[in-house]
Image (tube, rainbow, N blue to C red; front, top):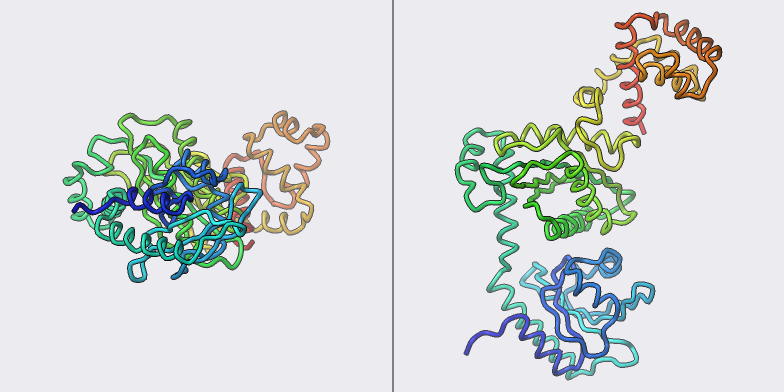
Length: 403
């Protein structure tokens, strides 16, 4: 007798209970769903249509700690989300959570003992099916992550082997690859395991929704994401893709963390992934530290910061000239700093600076004389302007690091 599929088991249980039954993975993506039985709610309909985790519903379910459940329990209703109360039965193999069996189970029409027993037996059979036949998607993700890690390896032999064995993998020899870096900074005392699981869920949602072949590796608070395409994406297309990935993760994290994404200078071939990752990592770090670059920054946007971010903090402080340090310390309202930054950013143009600051030229000349006196430097000297401009950026970065 052939073994029933997951869908068949869900349909049989739903028919017996006359209830809507859904089986989801730990990221609350639907693995199978029965027909509606008139008890469906808005959240169920949206989930079936979208086939990815609905962010608000994901956060509501996981706020009750279902990943840690070992026995059945109820997730309460959230009327504002169109979410009725669910009976949730964890489907496990040992310590591994394979899936969640969810049945709409409102307090005024609760399942009886015999029905609960039937649902528990069905969950056990579903576990056998999931354990015996891991989803192809899970295997593909594992292979994708392994290939990406190998292509980013510090070892030449490992990288060369990955390039030689690219057939059938997400990144092929002729592909154009964008390497993005996603940084996550928790807003408070966030559980590291829960943070990691949520980021992984968001990245998998992004992979499902993209035409590009996405793969990722995630460790600590940083994810490296590769997006392989046959044709080279334009800067606008690369930025749009980065922001979609960012939204996929950020929508699940909500206000529990700050997320930013960095993009490289452009797409590269498979052999150049390490250089592209360095670029996107620096861009992401600039976005995390400096609000002007949030939430998405390209390597080409961050300018001199891409150099300064490579420096140890003690060396970074040495880039700030003594006169500039004194000027900044004696300028609590930041008026002179703003004027100096505008002047340097316009290449020393008086008309350009006056227009940017909406300041009369007489007032601008007065401020510039004050600035030169405190710096002890002549801003007509192009070399001096370069030194001061770099020092001003280093000071901004040091302020951000202190915060």
